[in-house]
Length: 101
Length: 400
Image (cartoon, rainbow over all chains, first blue to last red; front, side, top):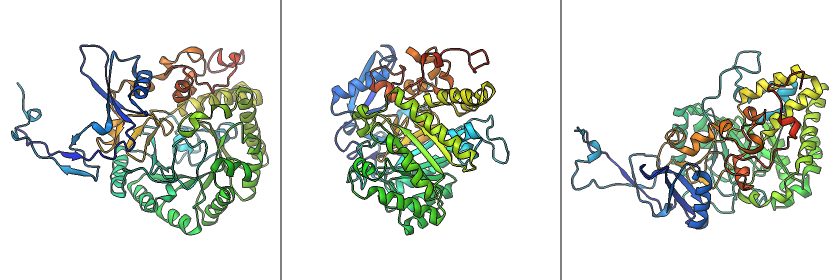
């Protein structure tokens, strides 16, 4: 089995200093998984929905929004300075590293 | 970015290698190999020493919390270099307020990316201009938006015009290639000739004219935007000035930026001035240019690491370089908006749908179309073509 993935917890405190960034998730119909398609900037969730629907209404049945500052990100990507090593789950056998048959 | 001087006067310029896919080492100003990677605008900070009323970034006097650090910036530049981004444009806010600017410019140059700068020019002292040139800066575009009174009113600071002109002169003195950036509005269109004349007199030979973008503080300025007749008049004047200058062997470079209806208009201008063969040749060059570059040949990374389809599209981000590499974000074909932007001619609606120039314009600005409530693939409200110009065969023939 592959080695467990080393991730860092990204410090997202400054991702949206004024709380005006919203992550956008869409799916084209009910049988699809939600897909992250970026973020929009707006003063509140209603404004964010208006922008997101203008950009994705032609594609998506469902639109979910989440304030960017409320997301906690664990990543293998190493660009950010403000990140701390993430503790591995108690069970270090991460499912994503399994060879599923 | 459309080079009027290249299209109408065969003017050869450094930027043509990207703009019209020019092969280096040939005399042909245009080749067939497309630009494969985007020019990346990096808005390095939100801080600015001026308070421009039309600032697309909505810059402020203080930096935003969480701006990319020097180390993060270098990692971003490494990623851009690995990806093959040909050019990074350091912008802002005002990028000159970053004390690490020369360090980042040098890092980009060492990594094989051509570093260029967009600045208000007021901080371009001789020492800093020399430092940036030594670091490998290839070009500095300096924004001036009117003669002294008008410019200073726009910029919100007395003396900004004089400081910018001195910055341009300083660049010329130290041998740093520089050019004018002029955003044309109803308020400053009357100053355009005076600014070009004044800067020509100090030795400037590159002039970029921007159409107003509806973003940042420009979002609320559509009332000062040019109307169709005014836009046709000013673009004609820019073309006329370019031809007149080249006819007297003054080989200035002039460019139009931010509205790809210009591409169609220049084809029509060439047809009026030089005939159908010349118009066809201009059309073919513009086909290689590729039309509005949003989401394709231009990308932007803002000061917080958010990746945008263009530097003007501030309300939507494709992802953040602190989460994923730029190349992973930009190459994500699962993003339905990115896919649609890259297949624009087939998605355009309204007057764009059957426009004969949609392949060289690609519908112009999607941001302005959205701002005008025309829909994601509706017409750009700044399109200034007349109905008879939009219809007919492509490329234009003698029978048109």
